[in-house]
Amino acid sequence: MGKCFFDVKGKDVRVRTLELMGQKYGLTFSEDDQNKFAIMESFGVPVQNLKQILDMHPSERRNVKQPGIPKDSLDNQLADWVQNARIANIELHDKELELAIKGDAKEEYPVIKKVMDILQDQKINSFSLVTGLRGKEK
Image (cartoon, rainbow, N blue to C red; front, side, top):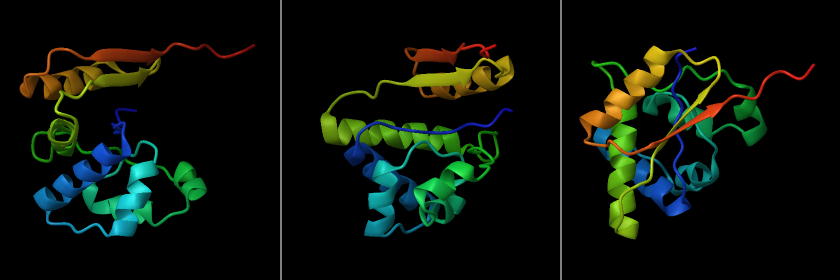
C-alpha cells in the first residue's frame, strides 16, 4: 500500500515528459525507449529504474512488483513527473493538463493526501478524484 504510479495520456506528451525527466535526472532514453514508453501503461518505479521496465516484454511488466514512484521530501519524483507532464502538454497542445488521482478502495487517506499536497504545491487545485469502489463478487 502507499505506492504511487503515474500515467499521462497522449503519446506525444508521454515522450516529451520522458525527455524532460531524462534531462532533469541526467538520463538518456533511446528512440526505442521513447517508443515503448509512449504506449506503456502506468508505471511505478524510480526514474533511474525505468529503463529496466522498458526493456521488459509488456506481459512481463504486468507481473513485476513495482515499488512505486518516490514522493517524499528528499526524493519527490512524483512532483517532477507531474510538473514535466504539465510542461509537455502546454508545449505541445497549448493547454493545461487535466489531472486525476486514482485510488482503490483499500488506499489509505495519508497517501491520497500526500498526492494532493504535491499538486497543491504546484498551484493545482482542480483535479478529479477517481476511486475503485467495486466490491468483491460473491
